[in-house]
Image 1: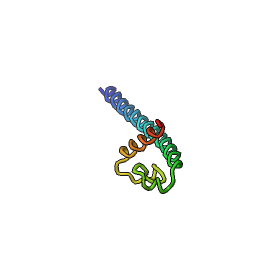
Image 2: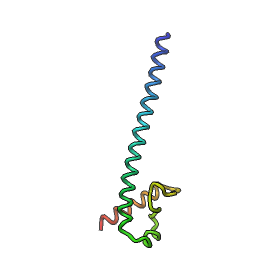
Image 3: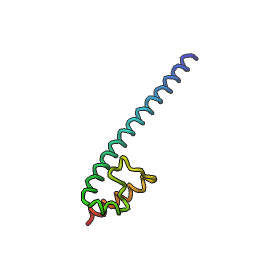
Length: 89
């Protein structure tokens, strides 16, 4: 009986370790994706004047990483749509 309890504890501990590693991996992937999006955003913004940028609905400031965005996903979808639209022309 004691052996079964030890095995269950080891299994639970292994599950915790796997979850932690999975969370860490997801965090690193998101961090990499954000760095890539930031780079794209910076390159895209360089194409426009400050006056144009200040009037653009997709412009969230000098950096995506420091922007105060209430609905980040919606703004990113709009921004990526703008890039796709400009690439199609």
